[in-house]
Image (cartoon, rainbow, N blue to C red; front, side, top):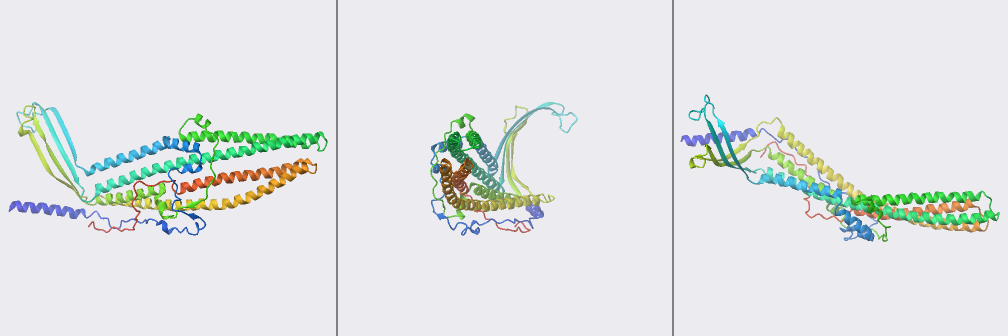
Length: 495
């Protein structure tokens, strides 16, 4: 009967402790953020004039669409060993290692210990003779086991949180690859523009040399005054200065391409003139904007961070509940070595361990509040990224649409300026116009040609920006969970 009452008293103490643990309450703590549904972002009017196609998503090696084998090699080489990418790869390995370390909490922990201590015991201490006042060797060999019973899912949630961060790091690596590839392609397009502008400057130099020769003949024949000759001569140094500036730009862009590849400056010297293909018509995927959240690396990474933050909340909530673990010990203890391996030196022990949060001064509530606020921040960052992604696509479409209108007007202006320049040259040869009129007409032609070249280059760059805005061919290997962000309020009890 006494044994039964002893067990009842133990159970009463345990229940009382669990009741006291209820003092740590989650009442009034909840999250505020809600995930944005991409379909809520209406884009029908913004994309009304765009052709849609299910196959319009960028492919993985999207840069091959520019039709330049040299560009293909530059980007492929850079993606295989650029230092910035290796740093991102290191961050992925770091996240995987952290997840592995946290995952160890799901399994029993076994530790072995061996100690041998030579000690003199006090003759006037608590140890009785014959040990008192003597030197003895204390030997201790033990094997301990500890296993935390994850009743409330704290350890599992912690592992899931780290796995979410690992997935985010992996997607960040893909985002870094996309950023590097687009930076290389954009620099390559600017190199092509510099070469085209240099061709125009060379043509201008030839024309001005021809006009200078004609002016000299006219001055010698006393058709023009000597004032015309210095004006024609002054145009040549300005054109040569323009050519020299473009040569500098070409060299710097080649050096920049080498730096982006992670290679030495001599690599830039070996880059030849770009040979880009014509630009195709623009079309968009038919599943925008809903599917965009799975195609943009930055959006996918933010979704994984939201998932990790939600698991962090579960870990914080589990801290309000009792922590139960199982401990076991087996080993040998003895004074001296002669009896160390005897059966009488055995040590055995097994039993549960329970820790209960009774009063913590608000630490648990504060920790949960921090996790919930971090969750809200992750959700709002995700929402902002989704909005920016959709607007990014529309921005490129708007610019492409109006650039096409500009190109049409520039073509007309170029044709008219070329006609006026031809008439001015004919009048000058026949003595009906002076050199200033020819120079003015030529300046108009040069300006329009520069605008046409710049517009063609900008068309390619906008196509590149559209490829980047659509995710650059990224497809997640493991689909992130949907960002379900409900405004869930936590009740005051822990039931």
